[in-house]
Image (cartoon, rainbow, N blue to C red; front, side, top):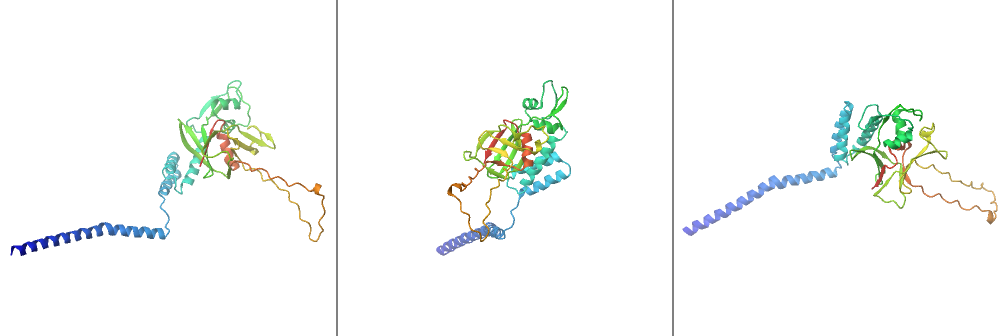
Length: 313
């Protein structure tokens, strides 16, 4: 009798353990495995349906745009700065950069005081070029900032000065040229431009670092000064310290002479071997970073000799 009771007890214990394991397994399936399986199925369906990817930066951009419409320009610019830093892959980054650049340019040339902008009293012997070199700016900037119609200065005249500390970053992969302003030893995004074309010299491979060396404005083969009436029409060049690296407008299209074919039915005219024209040599491919004229005009004003020029990929 005792043996039968013991067997029954063991049977009940085994049955209880088995039912308990089945209950735990069922709980795990219902609470963990089944939801996870449904989630994977839903994700697969979303991928198959080609639903658009959620862009977390778009909400930030819309909020910044609302600030801009309300006239809260500094707050809007700061919000867009954070956007391009935190969500660089957002589809809204391109428009955010454009708006930041426009705000920065408007602020730079506005009559309102901003950090770095100050008054200067012209001294005897001063010239625009001398003031520009001593004060870390450019002649173009002095003329534009002060609305000068002439380069003639008189002692006691007041000029608004804005020292220029800009680095130029050329991205060979994205084909962009970015101005980065240096303030307090730190670099900040200022404005981005899209290059029309980019042909780097064979000897220059990104990453590369150099400086802007010289600024040229040429029209009809003659160098022009900023005060020249035709200065705005001139082709601008910003050469780097490495040969062949230059920011410029696209080179002019060169016409290639074409010989007209003979009229149908006309006999070919014999030519002496010695009079046959030699084949015209093709011009070498011109190198540089090519920008729209209006974009280069802006960069030309803000970049000076010695500005850093970086090429990245």
